[in-house]
Length: 152
Image (cartoon, rainbow, N blue to C red; front, side):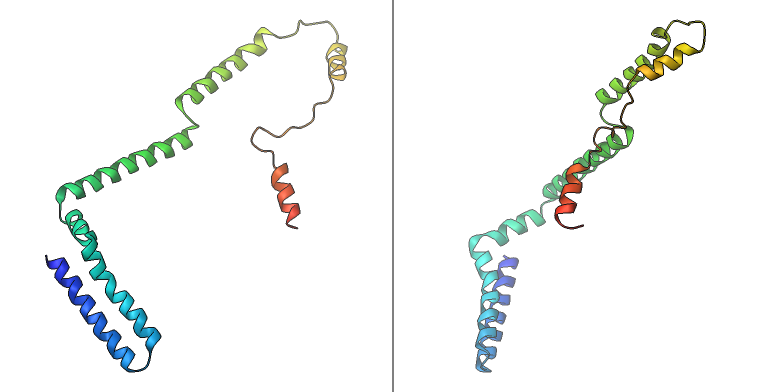
């Protein structure tokens, strides 16, 4: 009830200012002021003011907003920890398993020892030279093309 009264008073004052502005031959400004002053009455008539006042003065609504804030905070915290810790639990488990296999694999698949130092040199020559490849996720060719397109 109080909010509706305040909105009506603000609208009446705004319309009064609009009339004074129109009297001074500033019709465009007077029309704009009249439009702004009709908004509070329109909000009261549509029920928006009652809805907002119901939200603003109910403790259960504020508790709900608080719970939403806590949920958002927990979500953001878990995302930050996940990014810092190297991904999800499944990804970390796969990375540990891969590192264990890499540690065991060289000892199990070591080439037999041969007499003479010529064997490692011949093995090095028989292998083709590998090109340095970018690690996955670091292919910047599309970005370079966009920059060249824009002349940067």
